[in-house]
Image 1 (cartoon, rainbow, N blue to C red):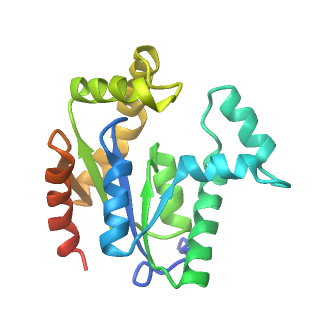
Image 2: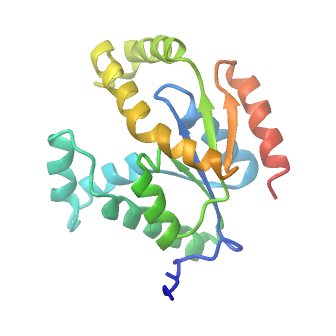
Length: 203
């Protein structure tokens, strides 16, 4: 008989929601609202990696640097470790037990690894919008954001990556009834109205 892996946290005590959606679907904005109204800690995998990259004396800084410079995905073990560490800190210092994990998992193996070692997610919030809408938003954002990946060429690549790697994760969770889909074509306020309906019944 296979031995069961124990996760770091108990899913009855720690509430994790994955937040996924194509680039420009408004994940960050909605996470800020959820954090404000429902007492969640917002963890962005990308932000955690960037912070670690610049943290003096970090044992992973150089490794993260190399992967990002080569345009490759940082090994999931590192990302998961940083997420787990941030969750532990929030729980131990601020007694926080609700977490929004934004832009993760990006691939199926990341989802499996996180849920089998850290904690099982409650559900995935998926912000769905057409490629055309997202492209317009990103190009508009690129005019003022200063982000180097908000240009036509990069946007095309980011859509392709999302389609090939992230979407299968959403499909898998959907098959297990663990996806809450939101129409992200609407205005920010309308989208948040839908989000609220989901969170009002989640606890």
